[in-house]
Length: 322
Image 1: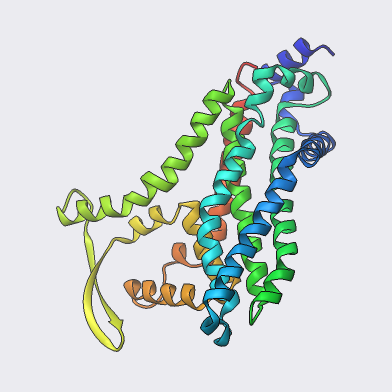
Image 2: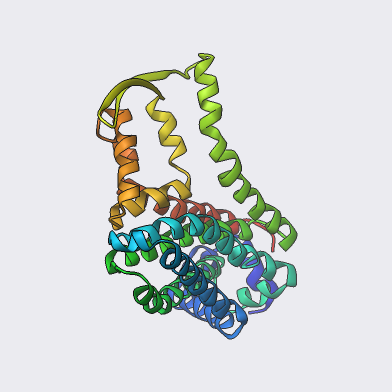
């Protein structure tokens, strides 16, 4: 089958386009991963995550002898590193997914892929798996190698907390990789794809983070259906009344993958600072979070960001001109 025939079949939404061949998906993912491993990308990312953990651990061990004495070193490491990975992992995932499909379309190599017995869905899923594997394995290698240094430098080392941070970082990274690959499949050039990646980052780290302030301002002005709820809070044994926004506002705010990442850490780790903050926040809802704010629900939010962009891309990619 020629490249033109393969492209036409895919563009018409025929059987080859609508079906998924697991073997083709695996082959595309394997090649995508192997190409990354043979380049500087995989080893560079592994070295980056290793250096990140070692540097933070070194700072904690040098300046925080009192922390080590309290046996809270791994908890503090998780707290500090999670704040960095919350920002860095999305950037890496977006860069990884940036040219995954758009680069192939721009260079014309996508037609070669589709001239083989590969459907568009095979290509899309294979790219997602390949790029996710690169990010996940580089995180695992970096964290694994750093664990030796971390255990040696810290006064106390909690394997469960450390592993929980790794697992949440991987799930978080896959969510952003899915968003990136999906956007890349819907753009004609790497320039457009790059603009889309920048837009996603600004949306989550600019617009979304500013929503709470905007909602509070609207509630103060009693605009439309924005309103506040009064609750009783206790701080250091003292009770006082405070106001919070309505439940639906917190549902919207917590759809942010970064917030879901932070919330998920309270389920997989035993970090006092995170748990104390969760306890304080729970007072806004009478001591118990609604279902959509509970830590286990954060995994559903991240799964949402993995699945929904791919579902949209799988549907739309069959209908775009290559």
